[in-house]
View 1 (cartoon, helix red, strand yellow):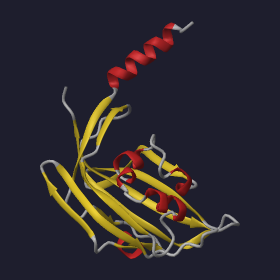
View 2: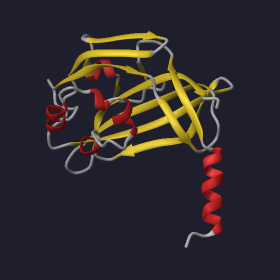
View 3: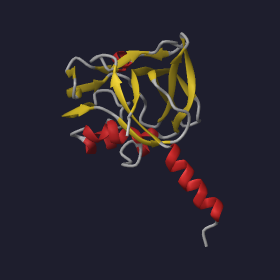
View 4: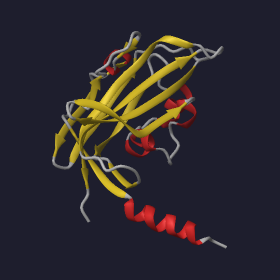
Length: 198
């Protein structure tokens, strides 16, 4: 039997849940990391992005083309992803409660329940090849089906945010002894977060 407190918690959390949309700052979606740590390389150093086509309009960010992996990760290594969302408040970037860690990104990159799949990776045309090689095998071509990216985040529970936000992505390679390689990929996606009014 469901307790009264469980029902109350469900009702309260659904009342407090908020929907957001993200408007990207510009068509150059992937920005360099603001705080570049030693060993960090940007996305354009890790991937040849010359064949990526982006255009920003009222519908969202139109993205198509392909990129080729330049980052050279040994096939015995695993790639971990750390993603943190920051909110710009009173002149500085502040951390939020929204963080993700995938210790083996290659094993879960096409998991349909995860946010990076819903908004980004589901648009790769050559998923089978990428699944086999992952994103760190030098020479791997990542082919996008043309799509429009305009993230909608539904039923977000937590503090209400408005204004500038950024997601900071760190892709780190670990050897078979679980030692992090000195070079890792760091990039940011920035935009304006708007609460959707009901």
